[in-house]
Image (cartoon, rainbow, N blue to C red; front, top):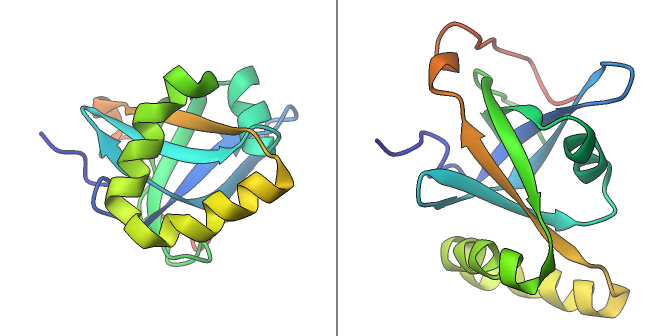
Length: 137
């Protein structure tokens, strides 16, 4: 069964700070098999949060993190290194095409290491754990 977020342009990825406060940010997403993949810089807070606690929530949203739909629970994993990230980067490039070019160029100049966030949705969360939120926080 295809994931409902696979066709979304943006999703709200909610991670959890050390103190338990949820933090949500919009991010591009692409399907990769039965998982979702997202790309970000290795030094972002979402990466630090996921390394500490892989439990995340995902909801559809717009480019600014507004119009958030129902959240679903998921488990995230950070993939490092060229071998690990290549398929995820390819999935994002396939979905977003030319839109990825400015980010690739900017990343080269900033010398930022990219990582792939691999997300596996919790099938039990589709109804029981979902909640609507008015925007990313």
